[in-house]
Length: 146
Image 1 (cartoon, rainbow, N blue to C red):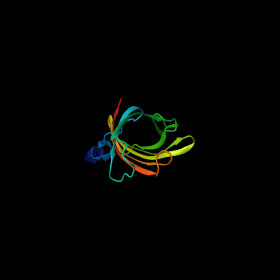
Image 2: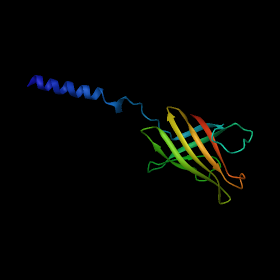
Image 3: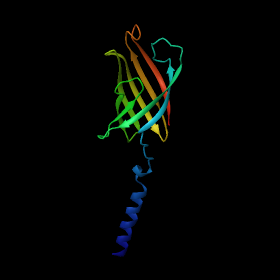
Image 4: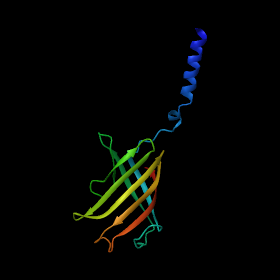
């Protein structure tokens, strides 16, 4: 009886050590303030360069009581509601920017978090009257928790 119990304990211990879920680093809580720098990427872009190859903005990620997230960006009323997947540490959002009641631009944000940094892309479509004709703008983004 004693050797059977020892075998069960050994198997349980080996099983616990081999658990892949425990070996993954935990995803950071992304709530809070971040600074994000976007660098324009020519590949796939159809917008005319505006002379500023990069821009830096402050973004606040807010988590609601229901667990959903939004990227609150200056000048974007209501922010950009999105989805945070804790298994991949990835935030995605389809975000419309309205000016005078009309959608002036629509962006797809795709950011992955690691500790106090983030990286990813944004793809934007700008519409008249902001630009004429409408065009696509691609960026590679990096960020840092403030």
